Image 1 (cartoon, one colour):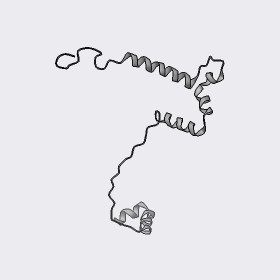
Image 2 (tube, one colour; image 1 turned 135 degrees about the horizontal axis):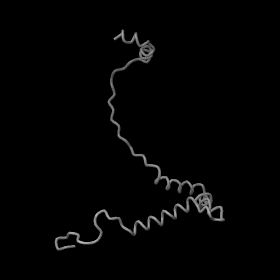
Image 3 (cartoon, one colour; image 1 turned 30 degrees about the vertical axis):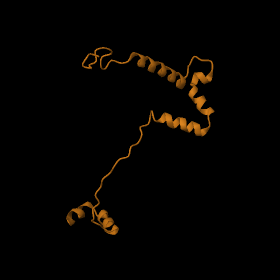
Image 4 (spheres, helix red, strand yellow; image 1 turned 120 degrees about the vertical axis):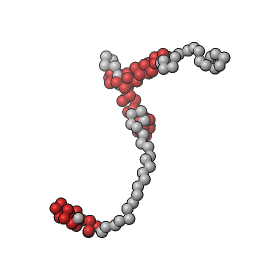
Length: 112
């Protein structure tokens, strides 16, 4: 930094961090292998993906906890929504409403 506190070296703004990109690629490759397996493997567990085998080995409650944690990466969380509404004080008996709805459209227009 210079004497005024301005940045003078390092990466420019917006330049991706190479170490993070490599780390993410390695993790992505591992997760892909863990989920989808290795089609060339002799072991059916590895060929089809280890996650299925591993999930079946844990207790049902633990399996649900794992699935719940994984869902946060695929299913958006619901947020509460505030609703404001105004209620009309006009009331109509149910029988009156049904009678009005049962009339043909021509009679409704004449009644206006």
